[in-house]
Length: 417
Image 1 (cartoon, rainbow, N blue to C red):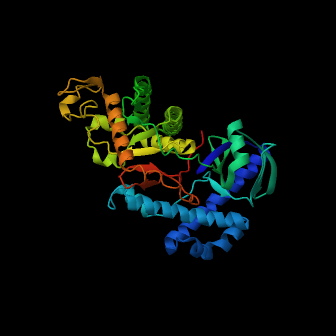
Image 2: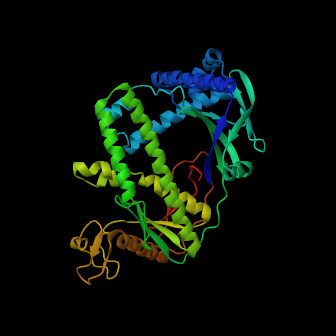
Image 3: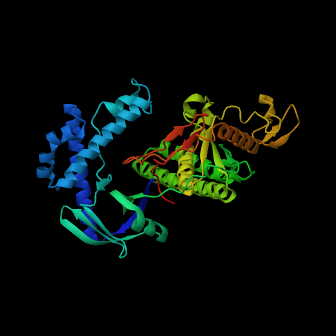
């Protein structure tokens, strides 16, 4: 399983100048290569190399490996753009967003990340230093800091490329690690159902509610501040808006990590699997009133699902995705389905048997029951042998079983916690 360990670099002023000049040159070269690829319609690595390699080395003074990575980075960016366009992530082909993204060359920020391989970057993990190639030559003894847990992962499992990036006045390296997976528990003692929602981010079938009203009050404050800054629309307001956006994303990511860690730990402790809703395409399926749209789209549920999936894979806990249809209207006791069963946002009262429960807990119990049924019907096929980990694999991949249950597969690259 591929995971990314982020370390913070602590360069001296001289070392920082060399890193900054190198990063700027690499991204300028990538922007120029992008223009060539767009004008000549040459977006494959080998073909673009014939058009740009010599010029990049001569004009920007990059080494052979750095020039190769610049060209590959450019082609990867166009490949990602084409995939997003095909998947509909940029809107319809006639939309303003789609045309803005596809009708001009991709431009790279001067501080954008640059990949380094083992020929350009070497690690001295016991000393917590690195040696890195720059335009000024090899810079040795660049100190870095990270947690003891991540340091141990680097020493044992680091493999492949690392990305150099500059953000908010700080230097970082994102190192790729090949983490071995724990054996998958093919006989779980039931499932821990997880209901994802807006008022309560996650509710388990055990009745535990995580990140509820206190978190939402903070989200409302952030949204109100964001609206004021957007209306002001001055240079300082835009800078502050960008800074607040990054802060809010870090906060959401931290909370998602904590929720995922707790869920996986509880499932592992009790010998159960994890049952999640398959929310793929929910933003396109659900129609909401305008005041509800911001709340519906303001939390990274896909990110939370990815964090649960990779932490579960690392712990050997099976994850099953179920159809979420009518889970909030179905009685977990008698199975009666009725829209009137949901009395309010918080409470569920069955019109058939009189069962009363918290709405989210009732939904999570239904998710748990569906996962157990799917696992029973496909018990021999829901735990496939792990396929070879793809090189550079990113995002969650799933394998569909004979029963229709879907288990998270190991080709997930994610931030380590």
